[in-house]
Image 1 (cartoon, rainbow, N blue to C red):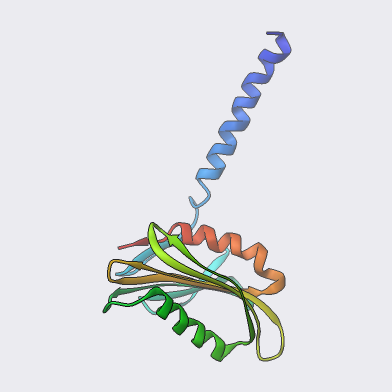
Image 2: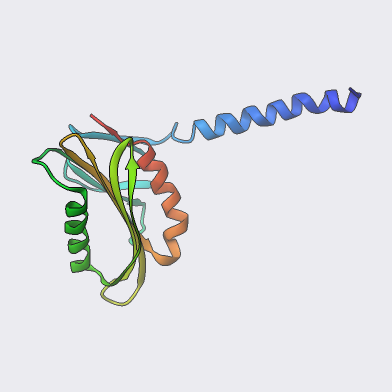
Length: 171
């Protein structure tokens, strides 16, 4: 090996170490939320808008066109994921207009069977939005999330929402 190659090895190792540390410490400075049903972390640039113990709504600070609701039900009577998804979508259709389903599919959410619906819609004044609803079944508990953002803010915020959801843990 040449001197140049020996010189590059420590630099490459340092770059790899810094990248590894950055990737795995993403949530280090995040805030914690804990209820009787679940725990979650969220970045300091987001805030809890509503707290109902079984559901919280989060949004970027001073942002009205982006919302993330995270929920867990506690023990409930037997239910079907498709039925629960349909009920949520019916509620969403009552608040938004011109809903167009982009994708519906069975998924695994936090190691539990789930159902995902991605859609576009408009609010009452015609602003375009995009959203995603995920419901999942953990034994007798319903859990999931609902994310919606103005169409022009969806891509930049869905990544953060997914990072938040990755921290979700049932109690």
